Length: 90
Image (cartoon, rainbow, N blue to C red):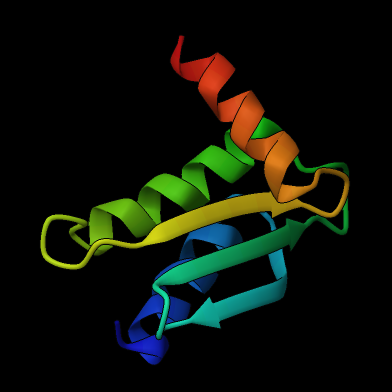
């Protein structure tokens, strides 16, 4: 996956929700990507994380390149965010 394209999609989606990216783990060898977002005003909620997550999924077809993606806030660990996303899906 092209890192600059990934970052462009990520930064645009985060900005659209009033968020900023505070951390990015980009492991292209293992296809594992972990994103942490935050807001200057207010707090990040699950909808913000889901929006950024879906924007990346829409931009990069997992049928072409399989990868693991987690988007979380500073207040949630990646594991907590995954649990919340599973709850939202149900």
